[in-house]
Image 1 (cartoon, helix red, strand yellow):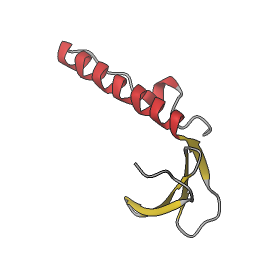
Image 2: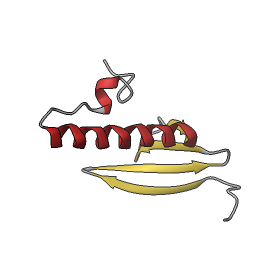
Image 3: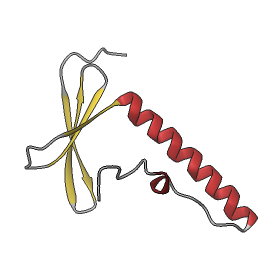
Image 4: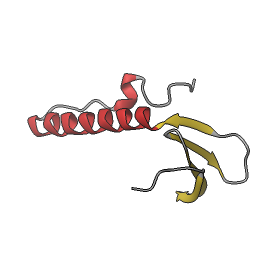
Length: 85
């Protein structure tokens, strides 16, 4: 695979919003709304960990649902939207 030497930017439409996603050298992901300056960054290791936790929660919820119980979501753990009040 090619080594990432300089930042790579791409746009993605999420609902009605356009996001700019930037991959930086050093395994960092940057996200911002189009036409804004404020960028939020996250390490790829943290992003990977959150994806694993979300998948585990989805599997557990499916098992609970199959047994007839309600499921618990990742947001209830306090891991998503952790800065919002």
